Image 1 (cartoon, one colour):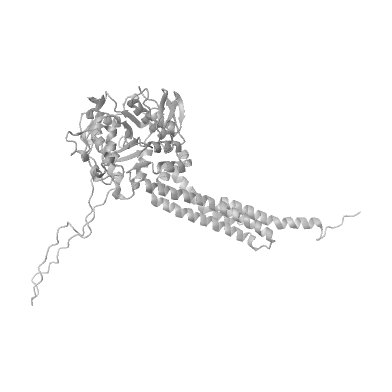
Image 2 (cartoon, helix red, strand yellow):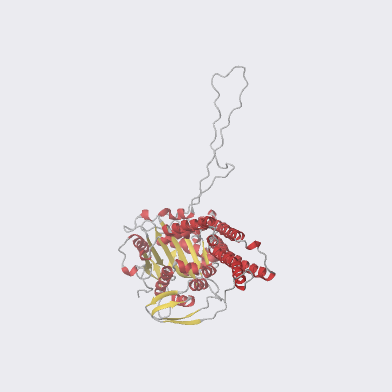
Length: 542
């Protein structure tokens, strides 16, 4: 028996031919999928090496340069996302990259011949569905990135004042009452740098008038001396408006007033429940958090209220000064938060430091921010038990028990921890507030913040009121990144150390001289006692 030669009509030949006909299409679709992952790889799969390398090189070069820049200058990547103009450029770059990847995909489809093959209708539908899936896979990342950039841009412009004219109003230019001691040289405490600079009007108003020249007299003889041309009046050069942060750093320090109010559902008004002054000294690289008791009385009177209180001090509690600022908002024209403006004007005199910017958050905002960050982990030295009033609409009073030891707290638990006065005092609560704030700062790592960015934006937008100018935000964040947590000192101005007596009702009267001395020592003296140094875990000194 001999073997019959396999002819053209043999089943084996037909099956092999069918595989050969299908394999180019499968290989082309696989190459298209790789092109979606990175442009140019699909061209290499189908054998177009030169074109594939050329197409893949451009995005690789851009990505490599950007990654190298971020590695060498970590703050550069953060600064990019704090400028609305840069975000607009990133939106354009995102669209350009999508177009580039789409062109690479269509070019691969043309080279692989998928558009020129005749197929049955059902095959065309299947391949059309496959290409639609590829297109969606290609477009989805760019849609998500574009949406995120638009949302971030909207957050920046809605939360931070825009434009140079939104710096602190002129009424904040309050020269602090300086009590100079040998431990606190005067040159360290320069006056408030918020001096408004006036740009000359374009019509020349206020400029010296040009010299009037007598009209020339007709004569038949040439003049004996050459005619002197009229003296030209120089064109006025407008005085440049300085960068807001540069003005704030004129004295070498950046001072931010942080106010936490007790505003919430069912409350008639807002009072300053938490008063913390954060200071960064760019000359020493040190920073400090100063806690001001809310029950201080006889704070220096804000200049805006001086006519109403001839005795020269605020007669009520410090937390009520915030409420008074809200009720008399007309005294602080242009202020984002008149209550914080009133406190800043007073505390600038008490601490001997001009308050550059303010930021205010209410109870609901605090809860949302902590939850958006994933909670906060602290070491609780003593158990805390307290009732908490509803921070958010639709909530009721709730009872919280926080045991001693390492605890991970959500937003409501953290609020109960920092607000509790059950079995403790206002001064213990101040220390807990500063510790939780420091713990949030330490635990807010960049990767985790980026993953939770949508929740953080939702929590912060509308919950935080600040007058930090948008164009100063990049430099402000860059300055914050240069400060090591171990270089941060926390001091609470608690009695009797920082008081000079007691008012009726047992409320402490602050001692400005001792407070200003402590401020200067915390920012310049590297031998600050360990008890005042920021702890590695949240604990307070009883």
